[in-house]
Image (cartoon, rainbow, N blue to C red; front, side):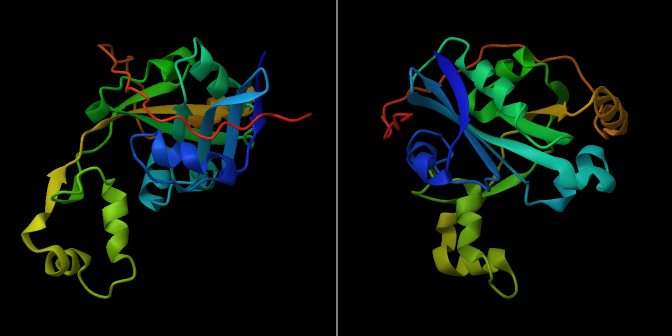
Length: 224
């Protein structure tokens, strides 16, 4: 039996740090788990994007306060229809109305078919950007590296160059497929969809890569 329940962040820290390719914990406002026969088999998290320009850029400043990002979707093994089930059920537990944005990373070979199956709106690729990198630490997420200079007065880039020398460099970020889902009443959905600042586009197609799971997290058993 599959069911989706709210979970505490402390329960899924192991999952986020050791299974998901980003290897970092994002901002989390809501977290849910997929339980199969009372065993935790998958997790999904939502959080408020830290960038005001990202929030404002989706549907204008007046809607920015209801923007959430589906920022992690993690499973310990492949489960048929598990991802779409977890997404679909968890969306119903979010505040109404909400604008949910999620990204499929082209650099990881992701297309976003699960979002297509859940009837998300596709709005094209993210903007071209650069990430901060350190030679020998390419496994670290760009934001993790940027956090090393948080709170520095003056140029944060210069601080990193002074600290790491030529090992610090900038790399073009892989662009991501951007998907949007609107929760709420029929009126809310129509209103917000008309206020989206991104044009709806046809779903992308192609081969989607599935990353291998070689780490087994601590799996919580649901006690009733």
